Image (cartoon, rainbow, N blue to C red):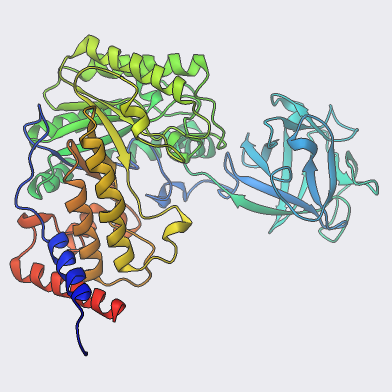
Length: 528
């Protein structure tokens, strides 16, 4: 191998030290022990990627609420476009599709849809017969269209039987009569699905209330069980973070299309936690109007309207309901006021005002329950919440750390990912710990990355680096998530298959030495 330079030895020694788990970690003030938790994601707030089979029985399931589509005339070979993103004319004259040429579906039935434009308006037929425009601010019968589909080709018609067609002047008219074929005619369009959502709204509105209720009752009864709580307790986990949706406050009959029953499931979780000596964090994952437009916020179509006063007020009512019901339960550790508000569309002043009022609501019921506030997702510095003076006691800031969802990680190798944990994440956690403010909580992280074909030992090293970094957080950490269709996101799979080794209680000394030597070998090969 040749001469090993001092710098190479230094890098190797550093990696060994970084990968050796500490034997103990001090607890945060007021905590008997730091949180070592697991999220119950995909249980009481649906996320289709966690359990895709929930959506298998929905008819025409590739066209659910919020599905983004682009329509191309097969005759003109041009895209349908809402000029200026909506509010006026619709043309069929664009060679390339972008935001003005993308429409979000609102599903009325299996084959009836409304088309929402980029600016929020809806395509409208003006009662049929005339041109189609994008001038409707809210949908009704004139904005509802029937879609006939033949693979990726579609026809669009009104309830009166007339079809939409393109004109030589690149307009859309509702005056095609008769039955158009599937050749290159003026009433046939090519539909491209750009993006879709699979959350609570999509599931409930896709199945309809009765079938959705049956599906969700079975899911809530079986996806998470008392045996899972026993498993967690046996493997050193002391807390579960439980995402809930705002409609839980309206059980058993929440507003349509949401389905009741999540409150009874949450009650069961608290009972299981008490039996197995676990603590619970209630996490408001989905707020009315959606705080981030993602499916896990139960958004209908990806839009965000949470920051409006009415929705903020309604959300505070939900916090009041949860605090009143669980504040004195021995298993409650904390209430998280909102999950992942959008940095782009949720102004900091509105968020701070909400957090401050939410903190006071929780304090009305308990002086000791931890009030957890989540950093904004996107381009936002978590330090902004340390400067906000939300409350005076037992306040926690939740950070979510993933080596994913950003092109920065696309070509990063094993060593790069591990170095990122220590060079970027550790200093941030330490800086926030010393900020003389709220406690630090890594409320979501996962033993997954963008490294292709990584070995089990490489996953183990990555997981050990994260555990070492996040156990330094003053409040603790919580893995995302207990169960998942994707293996490395599944905590139980990671533990059972030893892809994630939970510190000295889960790893034998020979394995630790082997991992450290593997880390050395990786560094030496890359340097030399």
